[in-house]
Amino acid sequence: MILISKTPFRISFFGGGTDYPDWYLREGGAVLSTSIDKYCYITARYLPPFFPHPYRIVWSHIENVSTIPEILHPAVRDGLRMMGFAGDGGVEIHHQGDLPARTGMGSSSAFANGLLLALSALKGRAFEKSDLYLKSIELEQKWLKDNVGSQDQVATALGGFNVIRFGCDGGISATPVDAPRRHLAELNDRLLLVFSGANRLGSRIAGEVISKLHDRAGVLRHMREMVDEGAALLRAGHLDDFGRLLHETWQLKRSISSAVSSPALDDIYETALRHGALGGKLLGAGGAGFMLFYVPREHQAAVIDALRLLHVPFRFENKGARLIQNDDQGDFFAPRVEPSVKEMVL
Image: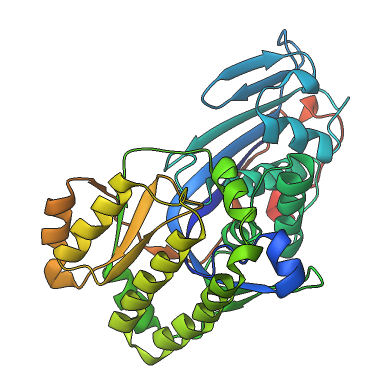
C-alpha cells in the first residue's frame, strides 16, 4: 500500500506571535490566516523485506538505516516513534514540496500534518482533523521541542480562511471567516507573494521573539485585536483598509525583536510601498523567506518590476490536509491487515 498525503502551506495575516503557548496560556491568542494552493507531499509505504535496510527516508538527503534512532530527519524519527512504528517492519517515506522549507509558509507544520496523516493511514487509522493538528502540535512542541507556535498546525490541517483562537486553558478553536466569496476572491487578486531569496532557522528566531513576548505585552494584545478587525474589514469589503492594516501589523511585529527584519528586507518593503503597495509583511517568525504585499491591481506590474524578486502566484484553498492516493498493491508486505483508506472519513 502506497499512501500520499497532500497538505497546504499557509499565509498568516494577523495575530502571529499570540499563538505561542508561552503567551496564550496566560493571555489568550488569535490568528487570522488562510491556506493556499501550494503543497507538501508525503509518500509512505511499508518497505518490502528484501531491501537491505528497513528504513528509507528521502528528503534533502537519502537515508537508508537499520533502526529508527539512526534517522537524521528529526520529525520523521520522532513521528515514527510517536505513532508506534518501532518493530513494525520497514517503512519508506518520501517528501516533496512546492515551496522551500524555512521560508515562513508553515512548512514544518505542513510536513508534520502530512507525515502523521500518512503514518496513521498505514496503520489503518483515520484522524479527525482536530486530532491531527493536536498530534502535530504535540510532535513539534513536546517531542521535537521546537520554538514554534500553534497556528500553523491548525491552518494547514483544516484549510480555508479562518480565525483561530487559543485559550488560556489550552483550548483551540477555528471559525471560518464568513466573508462573501467575492470579497475573498478580490483580496486574493490584490495579494502578491514574493520570495526574498533566503531562508532561516525559524526556531532560533522564534526563540528570540518568545523571550521578549511579555516585555511587549501591549504590542501583542494590539496584534491580537487586529484579528477581529481584519475579519470585519473582509466581511464589509473594505479591502484597501485590510491592506493598510497589514502595514500596521508589520510595524508592530518589527518592534518585538530586531531579529524579525533586516536592512535588506526593510529595503524590499519600502520599495514595494513606493511603487503602490498599501501594506505587507514578512511571513513566518522573521529574518528571511516569503513576503506578502497588498497591491491594487493597477500597481502590481510596477511592484513586481521594481522588486526583481521571484513572484509566486497563488490561490486560496479550503481542503486542508488529506490523502490523495491509496494503491493497494503489495499489501502482503504489511505486518497486519488494514482497512482501505478509501473508507476512512477525515
